[in-house]
Image 1: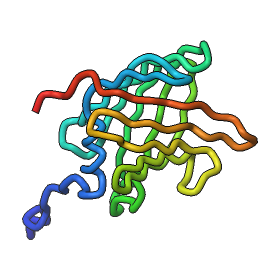
Image 2: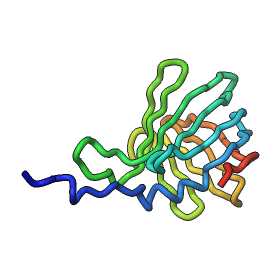
Image 3: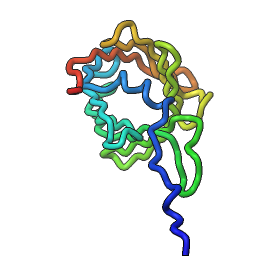
Length: 151
């Protein structure tokens, strides 16, 4: 009986996910939101994890987000970078991340959604942008990195 494990090789993290590593660290938020978010790599480098502890328009938001490619059992990774948010109010939210140059876009649910965040890195430690919601809602957000992750 032949050993079917001989040709197996461990997968590598996606080159399209790695640029989101510029988010790793702890960030202080201001604008219409306040508080902190911390990004860190999950062991293996396939997922970026965000821990959220912010207040938006007086409402506390505490959540954990997992950011990476969809890869259902036995299938290739998705082209887009997806995320799943679980918060302390029982909400489950999903997003699609896109980083082009210094512009970070986080689409609500699917790429091209009318609900999205668009922010620009003005330097390595600052991202300024806004959440936009259908019907004219949304809020501004300025993130300033207060702590870099150890290398």
